[in-house]
Image 1 (cartoon, helix red, strand yellow):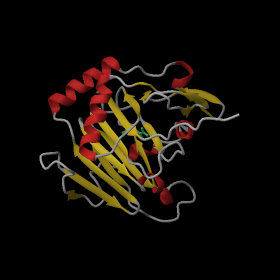
Image 2: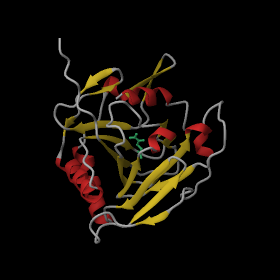
Image 3: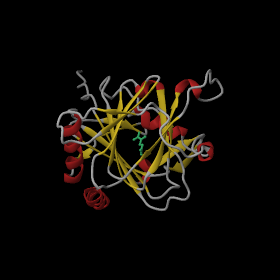
Image 4: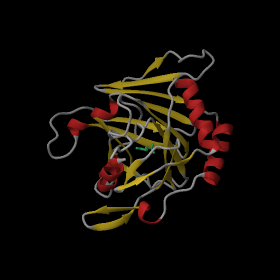
Length: 251
Ligand SMILES: O=C(O)CCC(=O)C(=O)O
C-alpha cells in the first residue's frame, strides 16, 4: 500500500513529541452503543468527534486473548531485510516494530515501492477475523500485523487512507498484549500550518480489544501509538481491512 511508504517516511519525525502528551482516557464523546446483532454479544462504546466515528469493545476475555497472543507469537512470520527498513532523508533505519501482511489469494499491495502479495491466512488470524466479522457484520480480506516488542516500539502519526482500500470501508483494529495509548489527532491541528484547535482523542487499547475506525475517521484524523518507555511487555495489533482486488492489466 502507498500508505506504508508515506507512514514509513514519517517515522523518526514523530513519536518523540508525543511522549510528552499527558496520559488520559477518551476525550471523544463516549456513549453506549446498542449491541450490534446478537443481544448476547459484546457491549460497545461509541467514540465520536468532528469527522471521527469509532466503536470500541473488549471482544476476547483474558483466557482467550492470552491463547490467541500465544498462537500469534508462534505463527506470524514478520518481514525481514529491506522490508523491515525505512528510508528517511537519504538514510536507512529499522522500522520501530515488526510487520507482516496476510490476506486472500490474488490480492496485491504496494509496500516500500514493491508490489507484494500477502501471505495466505493462518488459523489464528482467521479465528480473529471471523469473530470480528460475526460481531460487526463486515468482511475483511487483508490484515496488517504490527508487533511492538515493548514500549519503545511505536508507530508514527499517519492515516490509513490509501487508494487500495475499498472506499468507505471500516478498519478493524484488534490488540493483544500490553495495553497501549492510541492517539487520534485532527488533520487541521498538525504541523506548521495548524489552523485551529480540535481536541486530541486519546484511547487505551486493552488486551483482547477491538476498535472499529469507521468512515470518515481516516479522512480527517491521523493516529499513532507513541513511545511509552515504561511498558516492557510485547503487543501484537491486527488491522483488518478490505482491499480492492487488483485490476488486471490488458495489453
Ligand atoms: O498498533 C496499532 O494500534 C495501530 C496500527 C496502525 O496504525 C496501522 O496498522 O495502521
